[in-house]
Amino acid sequence: MTQTHSSRPLSVLVWGENRHEQLEQKVADLYPHGMHTTIREAIEEHLGQTVSVETATLDDPEHGLTEEVLAGTDVLVWWGHAAHEEVKDEVVDRVHRHVLAGMGLVVLHSGHWSKIFVKLMGTSCTLRWRAEQDREVVWTVNPTHPIAQGVPHPFIIPQQEMYGEYFDIPVPEELVFISTFSGGEAFRSGCTFRRGFGKIFFFSPGDQDYPVYHHKDVRRVVANGVAWAQTLRPERTDPQLLRYETNDFYNGHDYQGAMEN
Image (cartoon, rainbow, N blue to C red; front, side, top):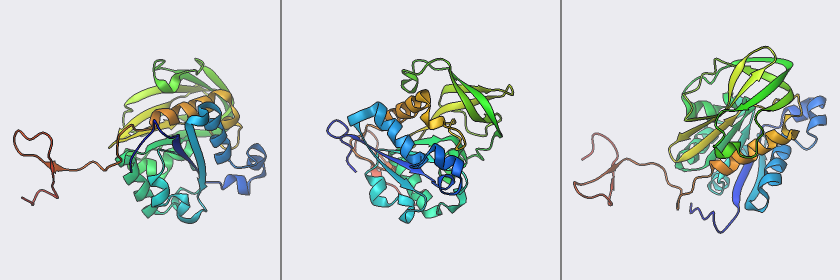
């Protein structure tokens, strides 16, 4: 896939599980058109004509994540919670391959336990949690990072689920935000990673029982994360094992494994 960011809008796909909205009236009242639509609107609000944003849900054919769709997606935004196990492994493998080849990924809230995030992190991605309408204070620890631009320090989310340490993830390449909660817990709430040619941003605020994605500062962070996660490369390609002759820096040859010449 050829990337031409200067000549076209950034192509963004917001993927939402879309189950709580269908089964729980409280969530439907908060997000009458689905959480994925509210997240989409947040991105469009801040990035405007520089992005083209579509949505997909778990119940779409192939979960809306076909090869064609992913090939045309620069940044995938992921929200899942109650139905991680329903995501087909072959679709997870497909998304994983595209991230390694350069597709950006923004993982929100309980997406920490999604198959794709666990696969990319290589750890359990478990954490402490409490669903008791906590007050979350989000602190910027890297004020020069692009994802932190325009974000107050700190900002307060009046109602939110508590996420706390220990959070079993690899050491983040960049820690942008930490959060503290009513019970005294602290959490690495905004982290970046790189896998292959892909850039990944995890941002924890966003429980379905509270109006978190209507919060102006959360909306700004999500949009900033999308803008940051794009990979500027002339072509989307998988990282490859290549064999080079001595003094030949430019003409690598495909190499299939240790037993090949």
